[in-house]
Length: 493
Image (cartoon, rainbow, N blue to C red; front, side, top):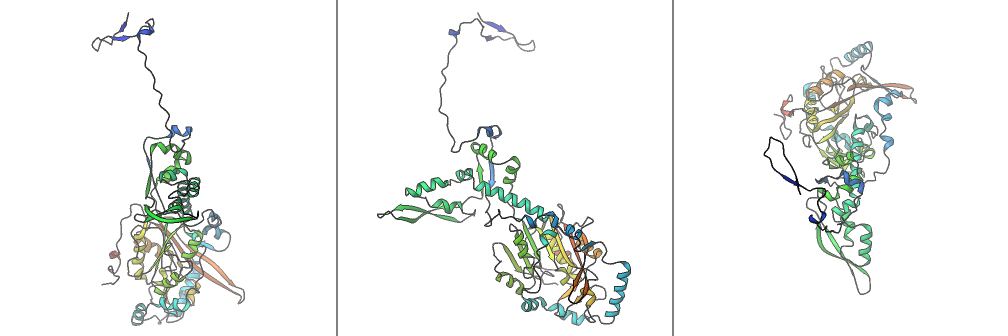
């Protein structure tokens, strides 16, 4: 006897058979369960990771691993205690809003007016001065012996250490990934034990593993494989055979391997691994002979460094240095006062001007700063350091060395120029070029008393530093918006 149940009144009445508890078990059909052997994956997936597995795959970029030892500690140079403001607090120098007191500045102004009255360089001689590249002559005479290496700038540039540590963590994660068994399986690499077994038995491709595992991802390079064969006298002979492609630019982790992937990396590490690779690039405009570039790379070896300078001799000296490598340093000749910088738009995380802008005339500042803004990535860091007004060097210039009544531009005995900045004018130039200079600590003076104990002299030095950023929604400012039109070849109309 079968019982029936009815649907609600809103629906048509229909009977559904429901087995009675007293119904005979023999009347029900029995189904045989087919036992299917369990399929095993190439890699055992931990049971605890199965709950976190997703059905979709994950794509990981394959990056070129650096040829440096990241286990070597660089932390001594990366500590926040070595920052510019912390070192100033230790008493080595002072960071200030005013370069001197109002009374002292009035006294210096009178001294400069008396010294240079009626001795300003005329336009004719100034034009001759502008046409000559005195920096080529300077570096031919002094080579790399004039300026000291600046081992402190990586601590001065705001947020550079933070950006570097983030980039280093990204690289270390990819090193861990590319050395894992998961990566070897996904790229069809063999483990070390498999290689040893195949070499011992003369199996083809036994030696190929090492070459492929050390390969760097490229688009077109093929890596030759080798075959190990046994000759009649049991000596091993390596015979070149076919070629296999290099590592791909990206690897897809299918769903069946996601469990192992999740067990190797935390959720935050997984997201970081999937991020497209972008080099941490620093561009120094006016790099000279590398007194800043080489120390920066020594302290921060994962930086991708590019630089340019007006002096062909300076670039030649850089390329002759034992520290130089074209894979690490991209340097070229460029007249930054009127040519476009030889770098792509939005290509650098950090752009620096270290004692460079002062070597130009004020009418050239806008072009150079606008170009620095162009190559800086949105959200990137711009940093400069230069000579400040009333520095001891400025007060030592003699009659005939001042180039203008309206500006603090002077000429040295070797023909090179030097401009001395004040906070307000520098802030205005940076703003006009498109930089965001908001903040109390973005443009400051550095005041330091340098003692010459042998001569029993105390010399008052004054420098200025400025840090700025490029807004995320910043609109491009073309060089044509400078005071003078600049064309692609750097020839003004």
